[in-house]
Image (cartoon, rainbow, N blue to C red; front, side):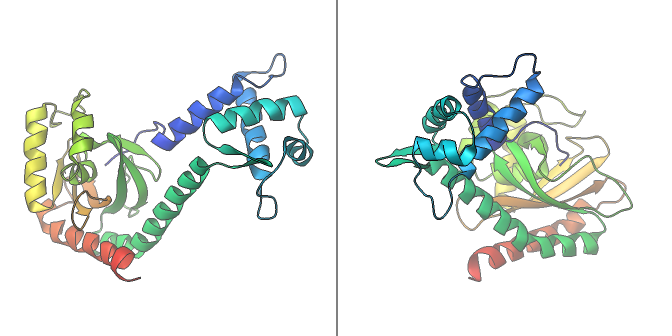
Length: 277
């Protein structure tokens, strides 16, 4: 349910990559960490942005000309970008690496899922008077892709935010069908978020077993006091690719009453995204 401000897995990878690059970039004397990071981001953007449809392969000299950066800086940064897979060496120079294509493909698939889900989330929120959310599993966390919330109450969630999967209905709806992710969660501690948080592996596994049989996951004030949630996975067979939930104050939500609407919404999104091409 509620989200934290911790970076996503992709953001962590980006940060690690930029840290590597920054080691090879001369920072201006007296510049602070933020200005140095902005400088690195700008230079990475210039180098990667130098490639386009008409310039798929560029030599070091051409990269220097197109970016208007010092040749020594371009050379050092290109070497680092090759190491992390953002660029690749070509017989005639350099080209965009497969890792960037992979990241772009992930962004495209997520955007299409959000677009397919949006009208269904709006309908679900309107019919229940509660917040409707769409999330995916990212390691041991839930990453919130979209949220439609009514105006008569506020929630500590946001699009792009994260929350530990073990204490959310969205997370448990996906963990129940993903033993690898569940094992990753159980390798970590399960901190108590509220008096109702499931903090023992045995309790969490029992809850996931029930979820796998019913196709519904519940959060009974496990992440935040006063908030409850019910979620259903988006799946056919195998692991869930995402999950949909309805959440709101315990005084306003009938979890079992809205559960069929959540399941129907999850199925409708699945049909629109994967069966109607």
